[in-house]
Length: 610
Image (cartoon, rainbow, N blue to C red; front, side):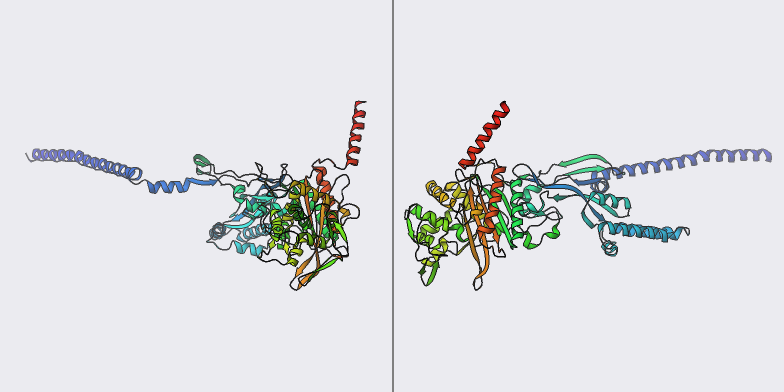
């Protein structure tokens, strides 16, 4: 009986245990399922929060890792002469830069490897790294210690080591594989004409910003506005998406009025003259009479804009527009023109210059000798101070001074060149006879070579005044008549005698061409008066029958026995003017030469026909 009872109880316990196992499993299952559901709900909620409610943070972090803004490649605009010859171009170069933080991290990494691996040869690695830095210093022409000092601050992330290195140097630097040393693309300005056009074109600094000449004047146009693009990159630094593109503003090319052929000839002749006469400096200007365009403007000494170590202040100064001198006899035609225009004298009027000197208010005006009674042509030819003084005093002072204003001697030339001045002229309410007299032969006023060139271009164009230009104009410039054509033609014929036999500038004569010009030899003013140093000027136009060019040559402080303009400036004028006329295919206006050229052409035509 008891056995039977025990068996029943055992069955009951066994059945109870069997029923409790599924309950436990079900409970655990539900817990796991609930946990999974909670995880997914949490993830979903987090995803909704990140992507919908507050997505900016992760977007910003992602963009910081993948988005990059890159500047579009942009080269400075070209500067060319009137014929398209390049005077300034941009060439691709590279800059060597370093990340001191990366360099410091690389050294620390080597030290950690040495600590972890006893067999790691730290000394050999450091020696190899030292050799690379020494090689880098040598190729860049720097001291290795100073080079290391540049990258010694581990808190810096960008340091320029050297700008604008050549492609060969950049390739060598790349092959060194120095940790933390990189290359960066940039451009460098190159000037094919070198020192010949340096004063006009100017130059840029290492950041490609114009700091002299046309490069500075038109820096904004030449530079343009650099465009940019926003791109997305992958983990291997490859572009996978172009997000935004800003084209920017393209640089503008600048075309000058300069004719580089004439520029080169003018510079060669001027440089030789400055060296031969041991002068302090010299300037030459060539202007197109009918347009006012500057075809050449040179100074000596000059400098090489491709090597700025030669760009000393006295060499960089554009003396043709920044330095003013008393023009001396080169402005004497204005006194004659004033008398002709006012009517106080005619072409054949005789002026008595005897006895070769006169008193004016306690001062003396004199000629080199007594020329006696001479006409207006002889006054110009012999460069008589007495003659121009009497002509200047024969007209109202306002009329005389207006003549100087009308030919542009009291204002800038209009070319808008860097550092240009408008000369020195002390306007006053009261003028003494002596002051008007000295003004007539070029004292008491200071002008630049460019102003004088403008004056002679006005005389050559029959009294038409227009501003000079250095940038090739798209439309004709404004002009006005300031002197009658008849008077200017008469004065040109008078000045033509200056270069003929017996004139003061026979060396300015050009075979085949009629030349009209005037010398100017003036003493330089000092604190105590006038010293023994001279400024020599020859200015003229050619050909007289149909003037095309006005040329001014200025030699400052020539040394030796030749200190008159007829010996120093006149020969340079002849060389520059002759070569310029030939380059521009201006036919000779001398009847003998013209007829000879015509005969040769006919003979050549007959030979070709035969």
